[in-house]
Image (cartoon, rainbow, N blue to C red; front, side):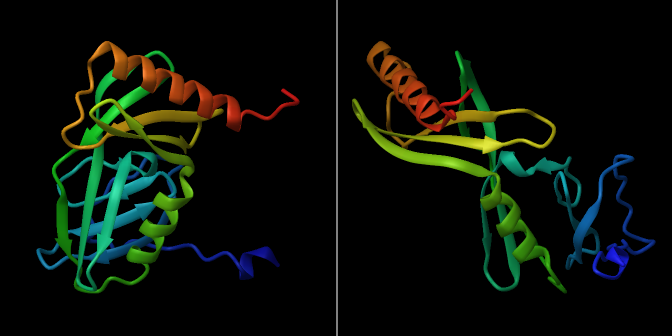
Length: 175
């Protein structure tokens, strides 16, 4: 009976997308250039790019015709968290968007478990915790506001304290 409610999305034969053995297609769309945009349970596959895992997409904007995706790049590894910055935005014109815009929004938003913006010396920082498929716990990261000096000892110490405070606040007390 459950098979009546589960719908398996099939890619067109000419999609040219190679999925991992247990990766599941959620939605797809043809682009103006011909290749496909494919949303899976693990991430978003844009033409001529590796899969962007949902927790690595910082921002996605749907204009009604174009999907613009900004991924996050790891700038620095620190104790207990990563410092992220925006990668160049990638834009595709979707000829038939189908469910891609809704799925991208739901999956990116759904990966965020915690987010808060804080003032630090000379600017600001956003502390974020995201769910990562196949990983226990949350992945913690920070993104500094433009113009914030990110490597001064005071900013590094304040950021570390903010992340630790957020981690303590989101850890269940009975663990």
